[in-house]
Amino acid sequence: MTLLESDILVDGVRLAYRDSGAGSPVVFVHGTPSYSYEWRDVAPHVEAAGYRTIVYDLLGYGASERPLNRDTSVPAQADLLIRFLDELNCETVTLATHDIGGAIGLHAAIRYPDRVQRLLIIDTVSYDSWPSPTWAAIIRDGLDEHAAMSANDFERMLTRQLHMTVSDPTRMCGDVLAAYLAPHRTAVGRASFFEHQVRHYDSKHTEVLTDRLAELRLPVRILWGGRDQWQPVSYAERLATDIPGAELVVLPDGGHFLTEDEPAAVTRELIGFLRT
Figure (spheres, rainbow, N blue to C red):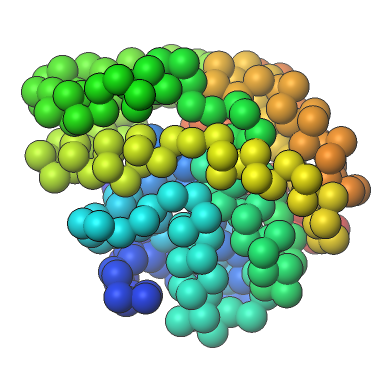
């Protein structure tokens, strides 16, 4: 299942996206290991509440192009996001972001302050919170070796990772698990996972923002799962302290993929934020 129905050429690369509804635009930026599928139970309700909703797959993810020799790091994705907004004639937007999408949103809001009106960040990477020790070791010692693993070994590895994203394991099984695995079930998809995602798991892209968070002058809401196994709530609390006026909402029973554990609560918080 996908929300996306169109493609657009942005700065020479193809992005898959969906642009629907009318009203103030809300752009949804997903994380990793993920793609726009994660917004399927949120974006339609935001559209029904009277907003233009724009959902897309990051470059190198999902149904978007997976180009060779193209930077897909957090800052590069932020630059591409702004060019994407240019193509869609969006002057200012609300960004609803998750995981590395939150870091992309923070880069965009700090470096292009006239383009971001509001920012919702959900269980984002920040400061030195990433990569995990496991991913750091893979990147340091054997990224190419892991990229060459068999399809079965890869799927088992990614399934273990995806099971950690939710607080309720029953939410990451069956058709839902299959949907998250789907973009990686080809040789190209597996290679792209390491080249376009894992290779850019690097805290330098968030640590560079640490001293600039105080520059933010827009409404920011931080939404976090109290049972997030990848991004502890302590990082949310630090962000709430460092970003002027930021609101922090913790959903105590939610995991890292709040849109799987608590989609109704995420929708409610986002619509409430938009109406504030």
